Image 1 (cartoon, rainbow, N blue to C red):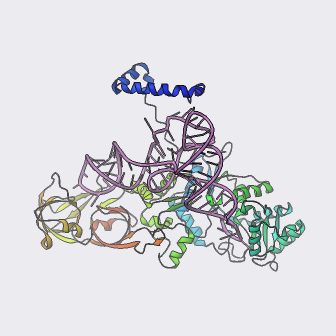
Image 2 (image 1 turned 90 degrees about the vertical axis):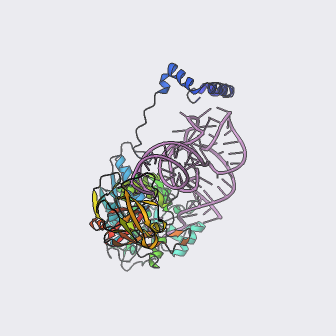
Length: 538
RNA sequence: GCUCCUGUAGUGUAGUCCGGUCAAGCAUUUAGGCCUUUCACGCCUGAGACUCGGGUUCGAAUCCCGACGGGAGCACCA
């Protein structure tokens, strides 16, 4: 009916007929059905060629005709980058790449006192780690003069005015949709007051504000004459005391988008209400508007992402620093052993939705596991080591593969009269039963408990259920840091960072710091130092 | 409170604009099996969803209305 619209008129009559025919056909055995189709309508059986693999997980961009696609990632350098930043950056980069366009890294650093040089640096480090290549870097604070010019323009056209009301008053008026007397000033008066904002001896911080003439009666609260510039005399991380009057996000962001010819601007959903405002301002200035695309917040279950959630944890000493492996900061993820490619795939798998997503860490883990599995050397590690004597060994020198299916080389291990096995495994071993010591062969337990002894039986055997790892020689004592969820619901998990003691074979020393390892039957870990690893995930 | 956004399996999404091929796809999770010198990876099979109530229509996940749930904004932060 989709194909033959005329039939829709008669849908009521056709319905029963179809039902009847279908049930008739279903009476016929499937083999005969196939045969008949084969004879009469062979084209139906042709397997349709798979559609070409989707280029990207992201929906196609709108309004791309005749434009160079330019996107931008605009962080405020007031904190360490986290997975939420990664989402914005990855999406912006992906769209630029899809269209052979450009990506701009723009620091929105217009709030002196909150920016710090280390944050600028950390954001760049984060981008590099993620492998996100930007074509240019902008600092809003380098270009305030352009914004001042635009301000002059908008004052001249009487679309902005200087307001000298108190903050409380402004806020109250906004709620009550009342205009203050400042709106009645003439353009000349506004210009004079505007200059007074810049004057050393003029207005002080908090005394005056350039406001956009929006609409105090608007249902959209962002339209109620928002601040465009304010005075901030705090020292700026890059500009120091050079400027006194600073633009707000509502002014700086969109003007930069416009000047830099950003074609598509992706921002998180909380800015959606400001679209009307931003379009109105650009219209008043006669400037080009970019396409806005909004997406929902990304949170990881039990891992605080927002600055306001993160900061108290650090300040109260609940978490030592921003690179803690329990945190969803890029540095935390890196230390934990999460790969940047996994972060990218994960972020793209979430799609461009306006839903707020709270993803379990396991989703990220799944992407990561697939990446690290083929690169991770397998090593034996035991906890609560228990000595087990081994007798009748065919050889004292063993060559163990570093990976079960991929050639990552072999390592040589020397075993003499005994090995160390995991304490938990030792408890399970009873006299008379067989066990496989991974990499050696099948052993029979001839003595259990305190005098645990195993005798080599054969290289191989069927149906040996127990397979255990072991360590020989002088193992390396290791501190294994195991991160867990920081919060369960609202409750801080006091036990979120456990430390386990483990003993690992000597080969560990040959690995580089940062290498990913899989301790057989334990999980993936990232080497931090000679005596410390961080548990990545199972 | 007002305004806006949003609601598909346990979780995350595709599909919604342009109603029929969606008895709903994918991934993760989970159950079972296979593979295996790991409880890894890989492979196979299964389980599991359109928030609710009305309406329009021959036909609604899709359109309309209402309810309910979640989020955001109401900053001289971004």
